[in-house]
Structure formats: structure tokens, C-alpha cells
Image 1: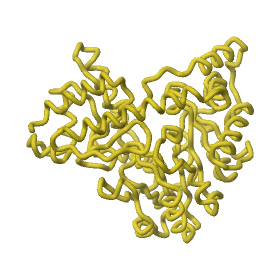
Image 2: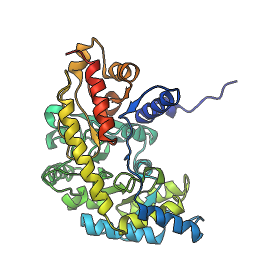
Image 3: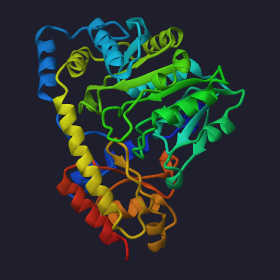
Image 4: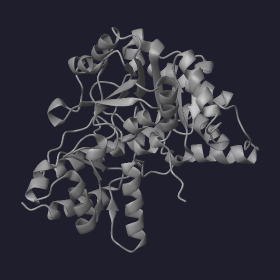
Length: 394
């Protein structure tokens, strides 16, 4: 007798980015020459001072359970970070620390959504958003954009997708997978639409806040739209900016009732995040930020070089990004040149024939595109893009 799984599992799929990364590692382990442009993590080491703070925490015996929602020291550091960098005021009781920003989003979705509730999500989107909504028994409603729209939704588009069933908007700026960032004016325009829908909450995923170089400065959604601050959950973390992906620390600040519900979800799932990682995160937020500045400068150089190289590949169209370490070129022309049917087939060809792992755009709600990570050395990036160029007939 086989064990059956719940109906819920028929609605969700494994992470596409995780699958690509696992396959690239397996092929490398088998001796194949694979360059992976699929990883969603920095290629830098965690800065020394942060590592030393973790070692000190271990030596000091900080290896026991902490408060479920985070240590007082880390929540205080987050409170000051929100005030210092985002002009957001939170009591520490309105902050929760989780095992990654993804868990914050998952906790918020479980706290907000139920059967029949809808969550509106701009596409391209991070692959996990729709499935997180489905796991919470909600219905994802996708707002499509593309290269011509600059990968950004308009106020009119948002208004046309809001209904009496809408309970949530998930906004990610700067964006994974396309690297765009909404300006203050653009966020305010979206906020004005939401003012007429008081039952709609906002999850503002700002995990790439510091990896940003657009002419317009970064601004948190809750700061751009203060009238919506009492129904906005601002999500961030240390994974991307501080090269701490494996440490698994994310955090969120928001309205008391919703943050309290998120803590309850966490109390019955993972409990507290790692105690040692929390001590390291205190140093990340409170310590010297020079390493972040240096990493972002390197990402910007890579971005500029990769955009230029991509634009020289037949059938590729690429928009410059405003931040992150991703680009989302449209490759429908290359797909046609190769006689393929989809970006899924193109990504398969690239890993099999060119030895380059990429992530197809379809899982991000962007069929006909590829997501490329430039969190690799310039040598690897140059070699990978040359391989891709050779795989596409001129």
C-alpha cells in the first residue's frame, strides 16, 4: 500500500531554481564541465567580522533556544536598521525574525489567506510566490508584464485585477528575476489604488534593497505609501547583501496583529531561527558596511559587462537592471533560430550542449525569457556567455 499525499500537494511544484542548481552540481560531480548561472546567491564569502561574531557566540555558549521571534539584541538591531535606512518606526514587538525571508513570506501568507482569497502578483515573479499562496489555500492572480513594460505593473493594471476576494499584493523591488526596482513615484501610484481596497494587505519583499544602483534611490513601500503602513509587511534579511545565504536569517516588520499571527505560525513550525546565525546578523546590521559597498560595486561592473555581452548574442534582447544580481533577457528570437518550442527546451539545450546552467523564464511567469545570475567571476561569466553565443546560430 502506497502512502498518499494531500490534495494540497497537487497544487504546488518543487522550486525550479533549486532543481537547476541541483542538476548543475550533479553534472559537475559526474565530471562534466558546467558553468552555473542559475544560483541565487552571492559568490562572495561572508565578511570576516560577521564570521568572527558567530565564532564568539559559539565560544560564549549562545547555542540554546532563543525567543521564538528572535533575540532582543537582533530585534533591536533590526528596529534601528528600519529607522536608520528606511524611515520606518517599529516597536520590537512588531518585528519577527525567521529562518530566511522566505519563511517570513510563508508565515505572512498563512496568517492572511484562506480558501477563496486571492493574492495579486506581478510577473515576472520569484518562483515561490504563487506556490506559497497555494499552500496557504489562496489563489494567485498574475499580472503579466514584459520587456516593453519594463517588467513593471501600472496602477491601471493593478486596479483591473483587484476584486472583493483580493487579500494580498506581493511586491518585490528590486526584483528577482529581472532586476528592476520601482521608484518612489511608481510605488505611490500603486498605493493610491490600494487605498480604495482596505482589505488588501501588502507584502513588500525588499531582500535586495542594498544591491541597487538605479538613479532613483531605494525606498521601502511603507515609506513611499505611509497611508498603507498599517497593512504592509516589510520583509528583508541578511542573505543577499551580506553574503549570508546559508545562515538563514530573514526578518519582517509590520502591523501588530499580523506580526503576532506570523509569530504563532512560526511557533508551531520551526520555532526560533539559529541562535548563532542571529548573533552574526547583529554584527551584519550594526557593523561596518564597507564590505556591502564593495560587493555591490562588483555586481554593478558585472551587470554592465554581461548586458553588453548578451546584446551581442543572436536572438537575445536584454534590459538593464536597477539592482540584484540577475538579468532576464528575452530569448524568443534565439528559440526560433534554433527551431525549439520554448525557453524550457532552450535551457535544456544550453546545459546539455553548451555546459551552461540557466533557469528558464516560464517558472517565473516569463515564458520566452531566461534568468541569468551574474553572481560569478567575470572569467566564468565571459566564458559562459561565449558558450551560449556559440550555441545560437547567427
